[in-house]
Image (tube, rainbow, N blue to C red):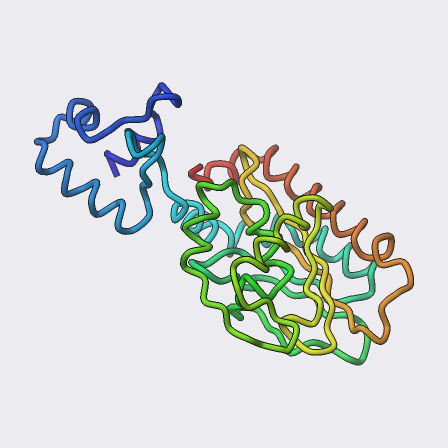
Length: 253
């Protein structure tokens, strides 16, 4: 933890510390620092940066932070906006946080319609096949995205599921350009989902929301009916996170 804190607090972002610098800053012997850094790199808590000349905080910290505060505070912060989104759209709304290479639903508000989805709170879903997963991935900077991309397992759920990294990268680029993600029957046949990202401090993604509709009852203007209120909810929750010091303390990057 001391070494992680030193990296996090390093004063010069243009010249991140190497092992020698951390040895001097920590006061630990070189073999001890080497051993600590090797373990942190293996667990993705640190990554090599700046052409492998320095060390930076790794993407797993984002995942750990999201899990530690996401399952309690995140739900409390988001619940009012999620209810509003469900009521406006009349469709099922999910809130999900990352867990390693998957997304985990931590809240679900059912559509008032008689036809409902089979998902439930606590369900883990793949990132490549879901609107929440693609919204989260698209929001990550390259240094955090690439380790996740390398670890993805492409499992087919329907005939529409994206099954390789090239197709997923293309979809993530489209997601960035338009500002929201889609799941076009990729995770469950007959279900179309729209996804948006929730950002924490420094603009880093910490969660995602989806609105799920049945294809046969989808409204004529989906961008107005679903996407607009979805993005408004994401923005409102992100703003509340930024304005709440107690929540910001739970985020480590």
